[in-house]
Image 1 (spheres, protein in one colour):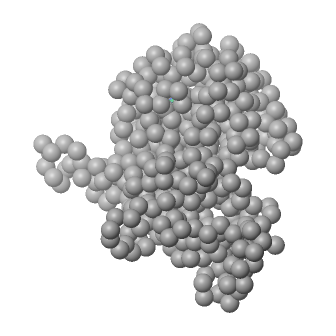
Image 2: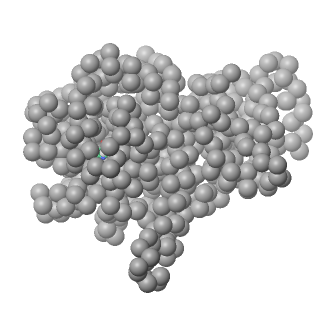
Image 3: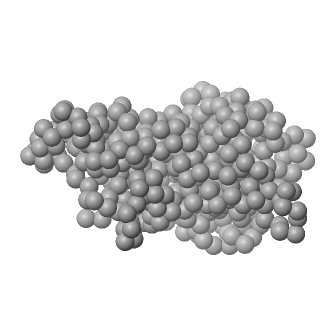
Length: 446
Ligand SMILES: O=c1[nH]c(=O)c2nc[nH]c2[nH]1
């Protein structure tokens, strides 16, 4: 039995290279928030179903310039950094962390501040068409619970991590776990609190094991977090091979790349999402691929801190799993549309190279360009696969996580393929009409 029927044109990835368009279809959603079926206008039951939904007031009919897209999945975002989005991005990573980010995150001992920031941020994510987010919190248990509660209240699918950073050499006294044992104890307490929250609500919120990155964690913490991830069968998130400085740090401390370090502590699994990866070598990529770990490509942030462009096309060709992350606030924008565009632009710059004083044939990395279809796949299917969710595509059996977007007409007839390109290149927050998670409206303009 249908709870909701949407009548309109939708785009969804068929595979990594191809986006399908379905014109004027009926998308039927059942009471559990799952897409039960889709009907094209030549289906015999189309008209009867359309009329019935209209009569029972269960119909949403899109206007001629409106399109239905899957909700986006942000695979890497620091929720507490929302207040500083767009600040200090001209600093190197370690200065940005020490002078801006750590002092801001330390403020989240204040639960009231956490509530204000997270209330605003969750609403912001939904208004940008993001329906699922894999988020870092801070080291503070209460504030992280507040983040989870705000996500539940607003209806965002949320994966929330209690950050661990206990290495006195790489963290300030005012913002660090006092001991490794305390960090692990707090993480386990957070896991249990979120599992309890899940029991009492229908919401999808998951705890995530979150070592900040190799420099900020002791061996003891990394080992304990690997054990907790396995004990509770949980997702893991961190940063991996994200900059020259961080890459060199791991080599100096461990005599190996951070990929090998994470692997040694059992932190690379098929439920792990590692952000950035701009410095990953061929051997690192093999390890990451063999473990089934996903790389969260953060193209805006990588421009500032990455010291290189992630060779996304190569990863896809090799069979590495890849999704897309805004990396608020290493990236300045919470919009995955902006990150989709930057992913395409960065791949073009990698292909051509950027230093015109070099001979043309030596400047770039041939064959690195990704298409808009590739980038859309990362923001939808890539994210869903990383988190083992049946969402990110508009197909029967999948969760009804959608965005309805107002397209721009420009006094010219466009093909369906062109309309898709324009939607990807020109959609801004104000063009997103409404957003649904599991068939429930969680954001809307009217
Ligand atoms: O972009 C980033 N943002 C962060 O908060 C962070 N912490 C470690 N490494 C990081 N990179």
